[in-house]
Length: 579
Image (tube, rainbow, N blue to C red):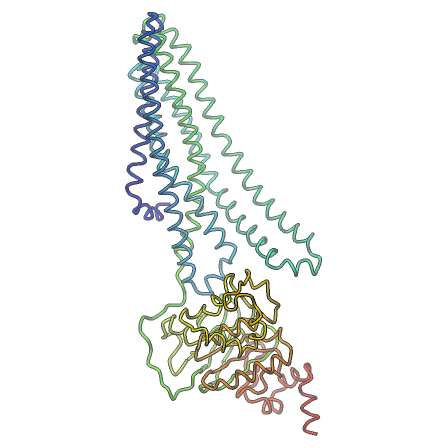
């Protein structure tokens, strides 16, 4: 938690004024038993109504002043806690966006979501309690003990004994619950993961009638969370009974011994002073209950802080240089030189990949599932760094490009189409906010999307629902293609982005892209028909390039490519034409 204390620097006034106000309220609260003792020993004993009224007014004034200071503290605590939570979430989100795919893959989306929401909420609550109660509760305990000592040094020993007993119980409980709260938060990651998977993939779950199985998965994860929560709750539940047992024993001793001391005249005790001692013991008991709750709150916050700091301690494995590299206009726009790549702790996903592509040419990538097609595209975009070899754009290694500059050079149409909620224009201008409407319309026309976007209400301001749910699969793919084209990048990667298009639309799209001579296209596809007109085709098999050449060359030299063509019917059609 101390590492996150830096967020309190912006709220120094709140952190200082808030506790001072609460301290002042506590002082007023400590005066109340003394006033009550005077009312009993003087006013009630002598039947002096005026004295009772006068001191009663003092009690009201103390209550009003205490309430006023408490409200100021509450405002300071709320402003600081909400401010810290807002800034912490913003910094956490910003830091997550600096991480590479390698780090994002390690924790998973659900864990990041839980930490930026639930864990930050725990820290936010701790900040509020820090300002409101951390000073007040201990001060009340210490202050009430001192006040009791001033009334009766002998009976004040009861207060010290009660507090010592409570402290001995509190620390072992706090130590035991920290581990359980950490496990509880980790289990919450699992619940978030399963919930996210099922809600985003609800159509798949229902299509395969797996609702019951997914319910069992969720219930198992929820049961694990419940188990940790119950264990922590059972241990934590010992705090309040322990406090009340110690306090009630103290009550009994104060009344019993106090009555005897009053009769014997020891320490000058009176009935009013005994009542004051009881009131101070009550204040201590309530303060210790607050301390017990604070232990729970700060234990949870400590566990959450550790999880948040785990993200802050992550550093991106991809470092972005500050200066642009020297490029060569005569060099191939894309060049892979003996590239190897493996995900963490796994076998190579790509081995010894070498090829070059000139500006304006089209590269086709084909292969079986898991052959490394998307991985190759990810290396070109530098979503991951190569394990060996180099990837170059215009003669410069992609590792020498500043990240922003590299992203401007490459536009990607991902395998899984993602549209963001908002307007059509907002989605079309994700890469650049300065794209004119004419360029967007041209991109929609190239992507064969203009035919349905022209009929949308609002034109470019038409609403797009979350995930593009108001469009079909083919329409979403065409919009994603238009978004990449509108950006005006030198290189566009199409990662199996025409799988939902019919053959006629796919042919029109390829024709329109072919007319854009200034753009270098990388097309990943399962269909030989989509890439057979490419200037160069790479055939991948188990991470290795088993064939590189044109469509005709590969039909004659690459068995894997021939098998793919036969499975789709392209090979036989070609054979008939040759015949």
